[in-house]
Image (cartoon, rainbow, N blue to C red; front, side, top):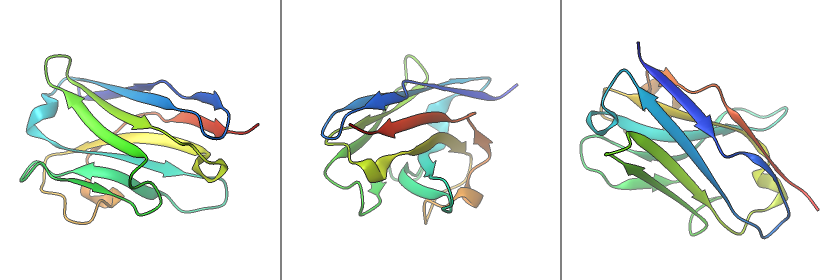
Length: 124
């Protein structure tokens, strides 16, 4: 059974860093497109960063470019999101996702499996 389990969220001060992890089971993450999404209260879900299985080039939303880095460890079958220089507007529930298809737009409907979400709160 395919499953994604996130960890690493929490409370951090502005300017701080967090690393989110997403452990996959029941499938080989390296065969899939991968992504991180977030949803803040009262806002729509936003694609933060994605890597398509077709080319491996990462996409980043403009709001996180230069501050966030997506990566994966194939040996651990785990996806990561390193978040630096965090801002209050990064506060949201963060979700990891995996999809068997090529990802073109880093949108939720391109993905098949989702984690349960982890809360990230940036506040002093």
